[in-house]
Length: 434
Ligand code: PLP
Image 1 (tube, helix red, strand yellow):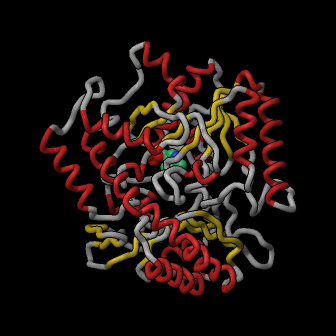
Image 2: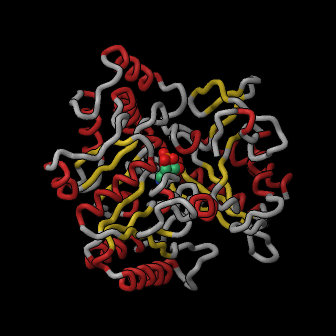
Image 3: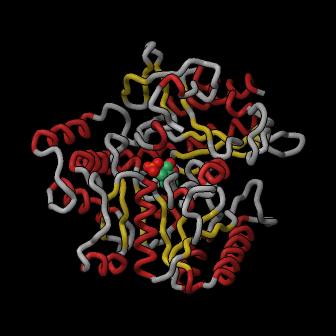
C-alpha cells in the first residue's frame, strides 16, 4: 500500500533499510537523491515504455498546457479527438469506440458496466492469478492471493466467478504438452460457463499475458478456444491490456500476439508512457451505442484529461517510430539472457514471458515448491533478497504476485547492453540470496 508519508515506504522490499527517493530519470535509467543511478527494469510499474525524459512527450504536454490545460468530458477538444483516432487506428478488428477514464481499475469497471448493460447479464468470469485493479469492483475481478486477501471483505465480489488459469508451471491441470494444457484449461472454462449458466454471464475478462502475477503466457490455441466459447455462449471477451498493451509484448496489444479479436480492450499505464494518468476502454461500437444514444451517463471528471491525451498521442508516435520494432529485435536476446539464469541456478524453476515482459520463478530444487508459501507469505522470502540484491547492483526489477517470482519489464528502448547488465545483476543477486 502506498502511503502519503514517504518514510513508510520500504526500501526495495527490505523494511529494515531507509526508503529510496527517485529524483531524476533519463531513458532506461532513474537516479535517487543520493545520486545513485539505476537501470529501471520495471519501467516504474510497467508505465514508462517510451523511457524517462522523452522530449517529444514533454513538448506535446507543454504545448497542450499552454493552449488549454483542462476541458470537461462533456465538451469536445482536439487533444481527445486526436488520441481517440490514434487508438482506433491501432486497435484490433472493429474495436473503435473509445471511452476514457483515469486508472486501469476504473477502465475495468467501465468495461464491466458496458458488458452488463449490453448483454443484460451480470456475471463476470476472471482467472485466478490475475490482476485487474484494487477498487471496489475491479478488486473483485482480481485473482491474485495478496489482493484477494486485502479486498475480500469489502469488494463487490458478488457476480464475479473465478476459473483456473492455464499455467504451464505449478499447473492446476495435469497436462503433458502445451496443446493438452490448452484443451484441458479451455474445457474447464466451458464447465464453469455451463455451471454458472451461460445466459447469466456478461463477460470474461483476461490479461493476454499475466502482468503482476508473473508474466505467464498461455499455451498456443487457448485464446482461440476462449474466443470460440464466447461466441458460442454469447459472452463478451475483454482483454485487460493495462500491462500487455502499447508494445510491451512486441505488438500494439498483447492480444494481437495471440491472433484473437476481443470485444473490448481496457488500457492504462503505458498509454501515456506514465507521463500523466490516463486509461480507458476501446469497444466494438455496438456495445456502447445504446449508452451513447442515452447521452452517455458514465464517465469521470479527469477521464481523457487533455494534457494526458497529448502525452498519449506523442507516446504512441514513439512506439510507432521504432520502439515496438526494438522489442521485436531484442526479444530473443532477452529470452536467451534469461535462459542462462535457468541453466546456472538450480533455484530458478522457470523463465517465461514475451517481448519485454519476463518473469523468473524460483523453486526449491529438492521439492520444486516455492521458497515461501504464496498463500500465507509467512517467513523470510529469499526472492525479496534477489530484488534487493539487484537494486544494490544498480538494477530495479519487480516482484510478482505471489512473490515466488521476479519480473523484468524495461522501457521499450532497452538494448542488448542493458539487458545483459540487468540479467548479470540478477544472476549475482541470486548467488547472494540463496
Ligand atoms: N489491470 C492490470 C493488468 C494491471 O496490472 C493493473 C495495475 O497494475 C490494473 C488493471 C489496475 O490499474 P490501476 O492501478 O491504474 O488502477
